[in-house]
Structures are given as C-alpha cells and as structure tokens.
Length: 399
Image (cartoon, rainbow, N blue to C red; front, top):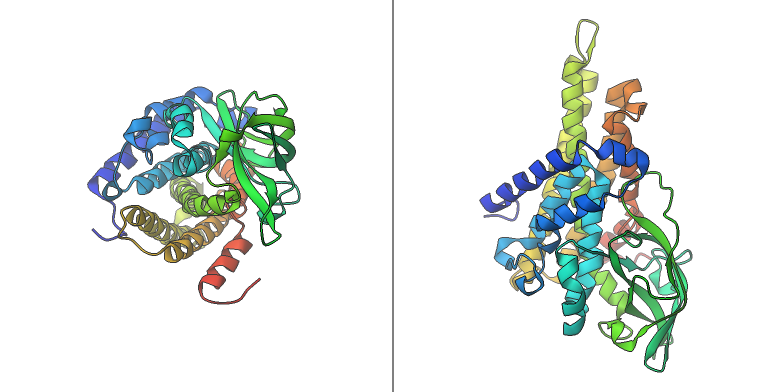
C-alpha cells in the first residue's frame, strides 16, 4: 500500500461516517445553521460512534489503533465526511480531538489523563485550547495572559478570543497558554495550564455572531484572579508555546481534510444542479462554460485530497517510528493546508456562480458553504503563515 491509497478498513470506516452524516446531520443542518444551534446530542452520538477516540489508547476508552492502522488518517476521513455535510460539525470534531484531547494526551500527566480523557474521548464532554488573544494571533509569543504562582496555585489573569468548544453545555475544560515568567534568554516564558469549566474567575463570554460556522461553539474567554492547582500545568513549564506548535501541525492536516470535504460537497452539488437545471432547451451542464468550471473543481478536489492523505499517512508513519522526519511532515502539513483551504474558497465561489441567483439564497447549501469556507484560510495558521513556513522549509530566510 502506498501513502496515497486507503486500506479496505479505511474505506469501510469512511462509509460508516458518511452514512451517519447523511442520516443524522443532513436533515437538520440548515435549521441548526439558521438558529445558530449547537447540537449537543449529535456531538455525543459522534462520541458513541467512536469519532473522538480514534487517536486515543484503549485505557482511556479510545480505539487503541496502532500506527499501522492509520488512526490519524481515520480521523481525517471522519472530518472530511462530516465536513461534506456541514463544516461546523467537522470543526467540532477537529477541535475536540486536536485542541481538546491532544494536549492532555500528548503532554499531560498520568493523573490529568485519568481525570479528563475518558469523558473527552467518549464525546460526553468537550475541551478547548485558549491560545489566541486580541494582540497575539499568529504571534503567540506576544501572549499577555499571565499565570502567577501563589501558595501552590496558578492565579490567571487575561483573555482569549476565537476559542472553539469553549462554552458549550458539555465543555469540561480549556487548556490556556499564559506567561509564567521570563526565560534565561529574556523572552516570555509561555506555559499551558488546564482551567476546568466553572472555576471562579473563568468566564466564557457570549458566543460570537460569526460569518460562518454558525453551528460551532466559539467564545471569547476572560480570566480574573482565576485560581487552579499548580498540578494543572500541562507538560513542562515554559514549553507551552512549543507544545502548541507541535500539535498545530496535526491540526493543519485536519483542516485540510475539512476543506476536502467542502470541495467534495461543491462538486456533488454542482453536478446534480447542472444536470437538473434546464435552460435554452437543455441542462446547463452541457454548456462548456459550466462544465469546465465543474471539471476544475474535480481537479482541485483530487489534488487537495492527495496532499491531505499523504500528510496524514506521514503522520501515522511517524507514530510508528519509521516515517519521515518532523521537518518533512511539517512541510507536508503546511502544503496540504495551504492548497486545500485556498481551493475550498475557490470551489465555493465557483459553486455559487454555477447556481446563479439560487446560489445567493440561504435555502441552498452552497450559500452556507460559501460563508463557511473563508475561515479555512485563517484558522490553524493563515495562508500567509503557511507560505512563510513552506519557504523556510526550502531554506529561505523569510521573516
């Protein structure tokens, strides 16, 4: 099997998630989008299906897949299939695993894992990761949120913004980055700390009124003399930013998978519509001006999918100890994220054009996908950041 092929087990898993998305999510998604409704019961059904536990070991309730089974590839397939029906549901899974579970699974203590992972892996609860701040987006080193030790407790003050899965009815914690001192080099010491929901001084402010992703849970967070035990430190003190960057590489591939699902949706919708829509004595799909645009979508879909699957396969191989170097994977992750996300934005623009005036009507899914697409070029590292990382990977001294 080459890195570009899926196993029979992967294809069967894809069909399972597709059936779930088509039967459980699709009939209600337009209504949820209009109401900005976060469907807690559906998220928990995703947990029952095992989607939040694909990369987790059995001891915490996960699938317990080894590297040869391709657990990360399975996660990307699940995100793609959910994203084919709705991007908000896809990002809920992506963030729930990549930003909620992974920091604790990768860097947490045994006690932290035993305390938090079983419910997170089962999908009974969600977790968020508080990194972004008003003045510190891609420049996470400019973090202003502080955490000071006082009698065995971290006292946290500051704020975060754009944090997914941070204020839902089933959110159990947010892992936040904060300045915990100054390093020997004089740079801010950034550490990651678990803050359980309901901790005094921690407030998930009212949800954002977003352009897209209406179904996902996204909040600004505030911390005012918020106290948590010193043992809530995740990983090594002063390594919080580095830990997040490592986790972010996985997230970039997962966002690429979300983009692939969106492009697939655009292809499917355009083909169906161009065969049904009659004008001037026949379907619009017989017109080269329409057919060629849909053909371009298909090319973008295949290229995006192959780049994404390749990066996912590299990640699984790394976990098995026989894969590419970290540098090679980082480059592949940025390439997949950049190409797939920008292709997704283009795909929704083309799909809206194919649908004509109907594409501008909210009753048609292409309008929702058009709104949802843009954030793919921003979240988990903007397109500009990806170009910078790719250039650096080529040895260019770009700033």
